[in-house]
Structures are given as C-alpha cells and as structure tokens.
Image 1 (tube, rainbow over the protein chains, first blue to last red):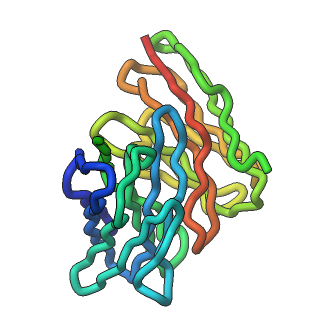
Image 2: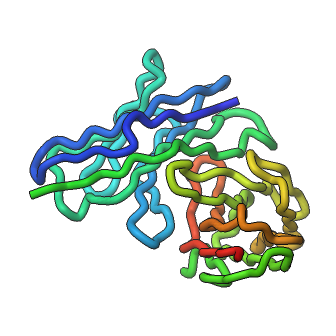
Amino acid sequence: AQSVTQLGSHVSVSEGALVLLRCNYSSSVPPYLFWYVQYPNQGLQLLLKYTTGATLVKGINGFEAEFKKSETSFHLTKPSAHMSDAAEYFCAVRASLGTGTASKLTFGTGTRLQVTL
Amino acid sequence: NAGVTQTPKFRVLKTGQSMTLLCAQDMNHEYMYWYRQDPGMGLRLIHYSVGEGTTAKGEVPDGYNVSRLKKQNFLLGLESAAPSQTSVYFCASGAWGSGAFFGQGTRLTVV
C-alpha cells in the first residue's frame, strides 16, 4: 500500500522568494517519487523524479527535490519564484519493486502555488 | 511525437447515456492509466493496465470499464453515466522507471 500527503493545499510566495512545497509518502517497499506540474486547462507535466542514486534530484524550470528516507519526505524547492511558476503541483509515489499492482502511480491532492509581485 | 492523445476533449452526456473515451500513446509504453480529477481531491486512479490484454482496478473503478486490446490504446467506458461522473479524465502511459506521461484531458459533464 502507498499514499502521498501534500501539506498545504495553497501556498503563496512573493516573486523572487524561496518556493517550498511539502510531500510526505508512505510505501511498504522502496519508492519511486515524482513531482508533476499542471497549468490551467492542461495535462500534467513531469518536473522531476527520484528512482535510485543521488537523493537530490534536479528537474526542469529550476526546481529540485530531496529524497529523505528517514523523514519519508520528498519536498520540492526552487530558490527564486517566478510569476510563471504559478500552477498546481502534484507529488506521486510508485513502488520500485514488484509487478502488477506495483505499477500503480498514486498522487497527492495537490498544492496550488500562487506567486505575487 | 504525439505522446498521449485523448479523444474527445469535451463531452456532455445525459444521465443514463453511455460513451467511450479513447487514449492512444505512441511511446511503446507497457503501462497505461485512467485517472479522474476533481477539485480538492487530486487525481484518483480509476483503472490501469500493465500490458496488452491486461487491466486492473484502481481506487474508484465503480461505473467504469476498460479494455486494452492493443498495446497503444486504452479505452475507458461509461455504461450508464451519472452526474457524479462529471469530472476531468486523464489518461497516462509510462514505463517502469520513467514516471507517467499525460494526455491533455477530457472534460465530461453529465446532466
């Protein structure tokens, strides 16, 4: 069984400020973790992923995330917010082992990021 | 590359009508998924498939059926539409370590 909790359904930051979107996961086996972004009336686009190897992963648009096994977290950060970052962000988890049901990709409920001047 | 293509993009149904949503991918992915997205609830998995000819239930399968007769296509059927099925439906495809690639969505309204 696996699940994702995203803390904060809405986050507001000023342009140029640090962006921090929180994600905690639960998984009975080692996880693969993903962050997606969704702009209005569009599908989801993959920002970054953690599968194996380095726990700090870099993605598109200057975002990065760090896998912390001891904290079961995969928080998304960006040093300096831009107006174009305003969107909804989803964290997702999948099992790294197994077959069949292990291919299920489970999403959190999303965090809407607002960027103000 | 087209990626993942969903048909149709918009549809209005009357209660009790049936319809099929088509998803096609050109990336030779083994896995395909159908999600529904509702405000405040994120994406909920309806059904998924781990390969041609296989399907499995997700979190919210009731009222939906699926088929994957060809590797590149994944069909989602509503046999008797209900207002509770008003939602945005997303199809996605993926490989084991690659995450999932999403279509642009189908906005369905059941009146």
